[in-house]
Image 1: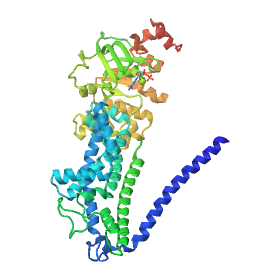
Image 2 (image 1 turned 135 degrees about the vertical axis):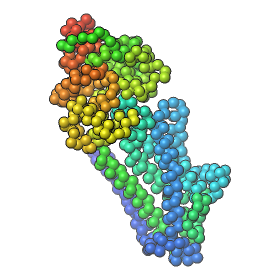
Image 3 (image 1 turned 90 degrees about the vertical axis):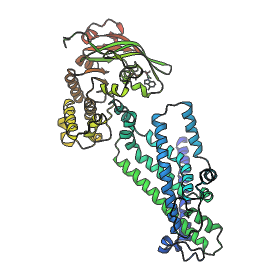
Image 4 (image 1 turned 60 degrees about the vertical axis):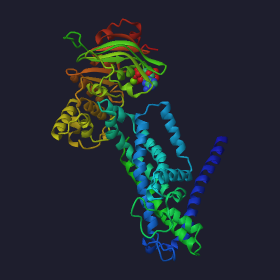
Length: 283
Length: 258
Ligand SMILES: Nc1ncnc2c1ncn2[C@@H]1O[C@H](COP(=O)(O)OP(=O)(O)OP(=O)(O)O)[C@@H](O)[C@H]1O
Ligand SMILES: [Mg+2]
């Protein structure tokens, strides 16, 4: 009897918390939609930005900038992160050095993004002379995303049954053959899912890119890696805080809505990948 | 009972083999000769080190950081634990079928062709020939010949185990190690696998771990009894089962083991 009551109390608390998070999310979404949906039209999505009259222009350069950023981050962080995870999970013995590496990765994942911004500014902008540019920003965000990709990829590798490895080794396969033919195909969907989520997070970052190259106004689209660029989160930030046009707040919300939709689409893709994989896999 | 016609010729032999997992001394100074083209069975209570012994024979302990192996294992007279041994080639020569069927998440064809492919065979016709041949030897061909492209994960447990045997045969090993290959199988699948082992005996040296006394008595030429990591008794199967020298062996075989 007593235990029954306890059970009821705990489940009520748990249920309340999960509803609460849902309510917060819905409230937030409604707020952004209500405020911003009015400015969404074709011109807003596909037009170039006009600083003089913000009602005339669109946010295409910011969308493209964020897209390029995401692409750059993927190119730099996914191969490095996956390789690192393979090394840690498949090759490395559990030595002191490896334990230090793991600890470092875990800590890096928790470093505030602004610190990555400062790091990127010192290393990519100044030391390597990339200037405040798309390249410097992509590398900075990639550095921030790598620990995330590593962790997600290691989790994916851990779900691959040992039988796939032992069975192949017992046939005279080399470790690399085992990884290439048996481990990676089984782990890749999980790696991709994790990476997409990490990528989406990076694309929503504002603080680091302010330091390493985002700009509020560009005449055209960036056409080189060394160009400055516009980006959705930074655009929202400026419109919401630094712009004196009375309509700025509405346009900030509209831009935020586009960003949310973009991130949501990426998460959706990740979910579809995972779902298809779960349906197909049989172990 | 099987009559041993040729003279004692050992294919694989352990000399003072010890295996440790950290401080756990799992195999204690075992010296054992496994005869060429004969079936040697290893019996003993759970945890006595049978799997550990078997895995030492194709160096599967290499991938377990905590495991340490000392002593020598001679394959055709050469120590496989010597520095410079080609472990990949060793594992091709000494194949292993695991206790739990472990097909790869690929088609039946790709499972059997896996070994030949990693060893460089690309020719489709050649691969088809090897796959058919191996599946026939493993007594699985008739059940799967019309669905080679379907997933191996859809096979029954017994079929999966025979597939794993076919996969091992496809790389043409000299020695095959079976670790309780029938423990997850029904009597009919078990009988099929026993028949299979008898037919493989002509070409391969076989070492099998089993918990099934009747199985050891039915199929093996030699039997080794392990207890707590030690080799208690080894000899011709008929002798071990009919007139064991050690009290512990007799107790175990007759089921009076506490
Ligand atoms: N990977 C491992 N790490 C640590 N200890 C291990 C490992 N594998 C086996 N051992 C230990 O070695 C001893 C022998 O185990 P082993 O698996 O060889 O027994 P077994 O005779 O095959 O038993 P069973 O009949 O239950 O399969 C046990 O004490 C076990 O705990
Ligand atoms: Mg065992």
